[in-house]
Amino acid sequence: MAVICAFVLNAGLNFVLGLLIAKLLGPADFGLFALATAGAIVANTVLFEWLRLSATRFYSARVRDQEPWIRQGLDRAYAVLGAGLLAAALVCAGFGVEAGPESRAAITAGAGVAAFGIGVFDYHAALARARFDGGLYFRLVAIKNALAFVLMAGTAWLLPQPAWVLAAAGLSQFLAAAILWRPMRDPVSPRLRVRLAETWRLFLAYGLPLIAANAIYQLLPFLNRGTIAAQAGLAEAGYFALAADVTTRSIGTLGTALDLLLFQLAVRVEEEEGRAAAEAQVGRNVGVVVALLLPCAVGFWAILPALQALVVPEAYRGPFASYAGLMIPGFFCLAMMNFALNPIFQIRRRTLPVIAAALVGLAVDALGLWLLPPLMGPEGIAAAQTAGLAAATGFLALRALTGPQRLRLPWRDLLMAGIACAAMALCLVPLRHLEPVRALAVSLPLGFLVVGGFTWVLDIAGLRTLIAARLAARRAGPSKAGTGRTGPDAIANDSH
Image (cartoon, rainbow, N blue to C red; front, side, top):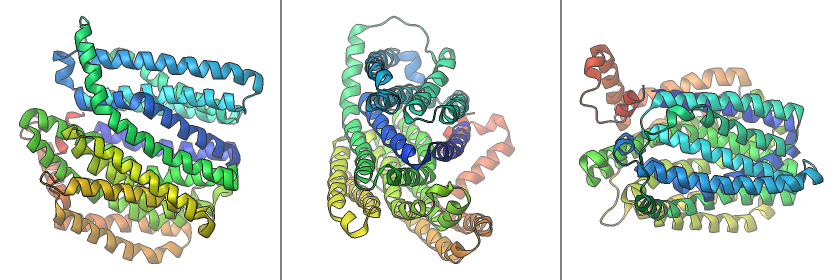
């Protein structure tokens, strides 16, 4: 449960911090900050994502003891790439000192520092999860969030320029990993150069297709935010960015938490029972992901007017709800790709279809950027993004669900989850026009009761069985709780 608690903490604090930074910087500077942040994420993806994905796929508690060259190869590659990125950021910072904190060189330097910090933190978080050390992962996330609040909010207040806030973001993530460096270490063992070369080839063959796809997906927000900034100004880009950040966190954060548990479970099943069992586990995982994320997407849409009125800074209201409403389907599709469909290709180590899907999405997004803004104005860019993500999801689903090796899905669970969400939407739609506080106070518990009731009665995705087993294990005591676990709860227990 420590992993889930860490993600709840991370999601809540990131949500508040994002709104606070938006308020302190203002729409124009926040638009520039968001554009630079998208660039930092692209840089992190291109440089480090293949290593993080390899850590998630190939590192484990067993590997930590029996195959130390895996961690050695990861550490060495991170050190080389990180040193190169920091050197480039320092060069840009040197030019930025003369040109000023709002210059392109200063923004680039801040984005480089942010990319470095994100890469270091994500790597150590992946190591902790792969070892099923939930306590260590929780401490890492908690320290990072505390530092981010102090450094980023303090910098935005004292030095309200995007370059400084970007640098503070990278520093907070790097320091979190540095503070916990000692417990993150592996036992000291001799280096085998032949093994290191083998591990790098393994990481490249596995990770390069995935990072190519991720880089393309990260280009979508970068391209779209750049387009809206060029066509409508940085303030409009700020409106767009805040809506995108809040929407993707509202839908994707729980999905990321589930993926941390469910994909590692599939990897463990493969180690213990073989590839066929792991693929069957991935199919069951899809039912869990849909059963939990679809209500998040529908519920977020239902409370969007109240959320805008109560939480969003006043300068962003109006455009926020318009953009977010158009983005919800797209970000739900992105979550389905990342957490439901991608894992089957990762388990099979055949990740080229993920690149093809990303290229389809980029092409549709580009076509939408050409056709839709003249018809819809700036909102057409949000619609283009949603169309691109939906096209990519459809293409990848076609590859995963057809052919002799198609993924077997729990279709009954998917249908029941859709019915539960439709019932929730029917109950919540009349409440969208109430006074915001009342609408939020009524909608949240009512939506939970409707979806929770359907899930419990119909045992959607086996969640009722899972919860009942968890409660029975707690009543039985710790001596019996560790036996016979095969579902997602096994990881939750192991994370204490």
